[in-house]
Length: 181
Length: 203
Image (cartoon, rainbow over all chains, first blue to last red):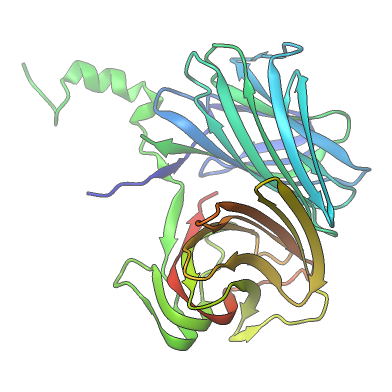
């Protein structure tokens, strides 16, 4: 008998820094002008791997959007614990790079433009290293492409994450799905 | 020892306090098009499952797949062309008519074949979704963000374009007209065959 392969996860609570953040009836999150969006309690032993969809826009200049793992309300922000590679395409220019830092980059938001990404996150709740891939469209006007993939090198269990920006608030929606085991 | 279903009463009490007891909301649902049009040999839904099987078609019209129930969608497709390689393009569609306004679609293609990487951007009246190669089956997952909403629509397509030589190709794109679309068209320059399933992501 077939069963659902993908379940939308209801956060146990939501923390935001900004104007507004709400958990919708089914469990997706709507946020307005926020620099941090943290849906708590989304990673559990019920699922191993997750898919996260984020759509966002903002009104200022371009800003990078990143992701950081959390255990409860404590951010994992070790200065060299997140490693990611980027493959990007903008017209005929293809670029790639590797970065070590205190968060993963997941997409760029351009001035007044929407951006969207599908993030696959592997084993964040297990006490082992975590991996991710974020395939994003960064700029709705000119259709820029960016593919981010990386790992987190600490063998620690995390039960939630935050979407963060450096300065400018973003407005949009977020949904976390668990892949049924 | 008494049981309620397969649980003892004490287990029931503990499970009620456990968030896992709550029935999870399904995250992705297979959508059956209200109708399927085509130019070619055949294109039909598979019983009640909703997946569309098509044979030697140049156009496939997936009608009534976007609605207010979902914001975002995933199209999963496997196909192969019948002779030479062919680009498969996509257009938003509403009320039986493709959106063909000039320069309303932009796509960015980024591909890697061996040690060669290539980038292309095009503004036109369609999105290039992927390329189908001669005889070789290709697979692509296409995410479409907000087609039914009266706002800009975007897509992401991640593909393996040539199974023989394992080429990677990702296409992303936008449609600038803030209009609502209920349907989608896939078009090939020459006939191609395969299956396509449309899923709605609950949010």
